[in-house]
Image (cartoon, rainbow, N blue to C red; front, side):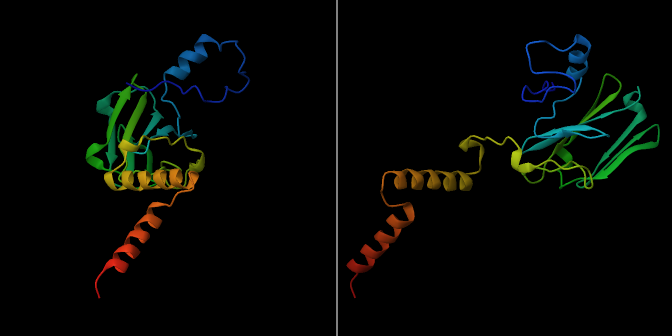
Amino acid sequence: SQPSESSNQAPAPGGSSSSTAPPVSETVEKAKHISTWNGAVTDKYRWQQSLEEVTAEFVLPKCKVKDLSVKITNDQFVVKLKNEERFSGKFHDRVIVDDCVWTLEDSERLVVTLAKHRHTWWASVFEGDPEIDCTKVESTRKVHEYDDETQGAIRKIMFDQSQKAQGLPSSDQIRTAELMRNAWDAEG
């Protein structure tokens, strides 16, 4: 199932953020498409992303799955409709091909989900396309979602911030004091 339009989107041109609801046809049209959370709308497709994957939607003429050829390599993407190339591009970064999937929805929307090789924010899906400002990406994550090494680094930073706020020594200062004490107490 595809996520609905994000509520943090700006109103449509000519629309407003007042309590007046948009026309039903506009709402239905928006609901047909993927959200553009942490992504954008280009003249060729719309896209969204998480740290783990990118989802892009391409609007095609009405067709059947058998009419489509979708080729995904670790850095390239090609879509053909009835043997005619409709779109191709080089990815912003590498993908894990075996974890990428695509579907044809409503016989006219190709939705492609790409598994990122590196869990980073992409400025665009394809090289040369308009880029988003990755510093404005909504990127909250829970500590347990990170690998063990990163979790340890986060906990150390949190501990050190807490110690500093209380006027107590940081973890590095505690470790240095222990080394000095052990060296002082050592025979020799």
